[in-house]
Amino acid sequence: MSGIALVRKPGPRIAEGIVTNIQREPVDRALAAEQHARYVAALGDGGWRAVHAEPADDLPDAPFVEDAVVVAGRLAVLTRPGAPERRPEVESVAAAVRLLGMKAVRITGPGTLDGGDVLQVGTTVYVGRSARTNEQGVRQLAALLPERKVVSVRLTGVLHLKSAVTALPDGTLIGDPAYVDLPGLLVPPEESGAHVVPLGGDRVLMAASAPETAAMLEKRGFSVTAVDISEFEKLEGCVTCLSVLIPTTP
Image (cartoon, rainbow, N blue to C red; front, top):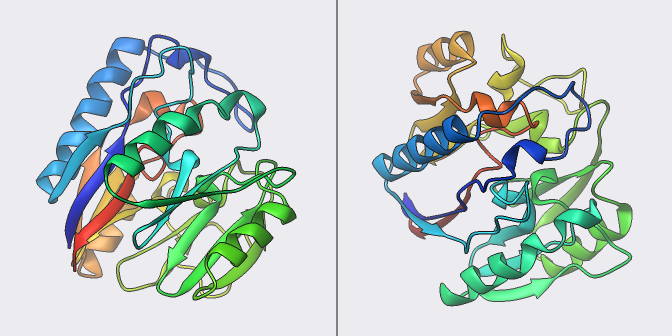
């Protein structure tokens, strides 16, 4: 599998990003920029060509581009983030997906939906009921994806569903049962080990902060690429929220 990785470079206000469930720490802007570039390079090495959304230097959380759009095939569902200050991020992402020739539809008020709450596994779409995504948002997404089975999932103590659980290339869910009640979870040794980006085949992208999980997955036959995203982790970010992968080949 290969395709396009929609990304956005961190701006000068990155250190002001919203922090909800962890204690705020100082963020090194220059290091964040370097880490983002290495993250994009790792996606490129995995066969994903980077397309950058327009800079949004006045929006601190803009590099967490996943929250602005949910991609299902050639359909781009533009979200309505639960944090009002993040809603201006969506328009430039909308412009980017339209330039890619995708059909764009929207979540509308009073619904709220963050892309980080949406986990697609085959024809099933798990959607986290979080502080950022409400029931109206879940229902609207289900109506926009009638060919998918949409499952609402309650969360405890985490920002987004994909802060707690993601899926390996074989469909296995990996995550922390302390935050999410889903059956059959593979529990990682580190909290950040719950975050994987499938790159195609047996390849996954993970944070360098989860070396024990990486070793566990390699023993299960997966090929792991690790990237350091420490500055984004200080803002409750993870490897999933820094890109939206849009496959162009099976």
